[in-house]
Figure 1 (cartoon, rainbow, N blue to C red):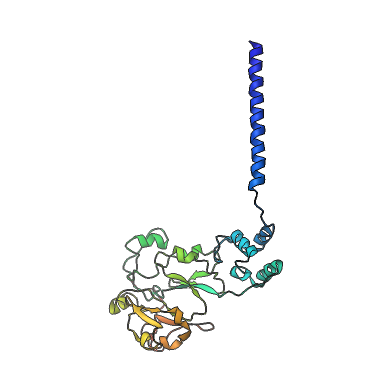
Figure 2 (tube, one colour):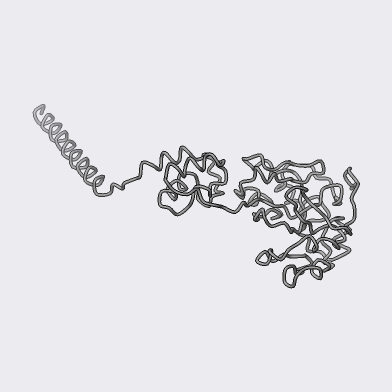
Length: 292
């Protein structure tokens, strides 16, 4: 009996040994057959990138961007998070031109802070725009407008968005990388990524008509069409009671389009002076929030 047990054990050990040898041999063969060369420069480039994985460059993260740099599909300057020195270092490492990229930034289609936009209710709950929006569209009478609970500022990894005294997000163009996180988080779809060179901007997304819109928000677009009449043909049109700019014709734009806007909903974004409204826009001097 002891001899039989020993034989069985020996047979099992031999079987497992042969099976292990067979499997390991298969793995070695598969590794040689399936091995894919990876350029060692990818690791170096990934280390030179900011490791934010923000997606502003159009890639899913810094490593895919590094791979695209190696293949020549993108230029170093397309990493809008890296500073000029880092971009030049990457270009020198690869022996390529750094490239030119049009500066793009996030813009908010709303100017309705709590000092000009009326509140229909007092919201008490989770301090989040998305949570507040679930409750009948939010506490503002202008249900299309910014709720002002700073989801966009919270999600911005680059501290490019701050909230002003009237609960309205302010984008710092110098810090903005156009990553699009604020676009994704806003429950009202008020943010969009725009070329920084585009100076004419409609700071409203109202779809109500005339007096109704202005009763809810003093700086709402009322679809009066004055900007349309004062602009080159086709530059601005009225769609669903809102002025819409055709950015394919933006080269025709000038501050003239803002001059007769009665509410200041359409503005000119001056690189030095900031937001400029037209001469006939009502002047808002109120600082405190409107009562409910």
